[in-house]
Length: 129
Image (cartoon, rainbow, N blue to C red; front, side, top):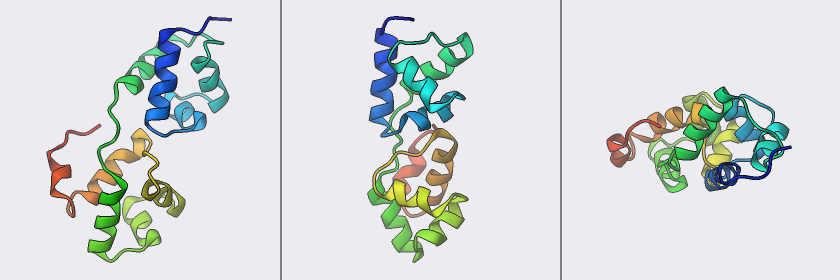
């Protein structure tokens, strides 16, 4: 068993900053949510590959698209949740979570930005996550 480290603490803080569950973190790292939780608590030492992915996750900024921007885009396009989900290529529940303030997983962040960008010109000036 590995003791909790500043690294494991940073991983937990990054997950909380992104408003992700341990399951979401696990998906980002390519492990189960249970294993992600063990990494956060310092109960297990990850492989070098997982450490590199975790470092990128820790350094990644909060995704810049806000719920207000998503709502503005949906209103401008006259889209309901289902139409927005179809345009983003995600499940309707995913868009509902984004609208409620949940940060997108890395694999969906670009989809959200592409959807919101035409309605929110300020999105275009941000680099891709």
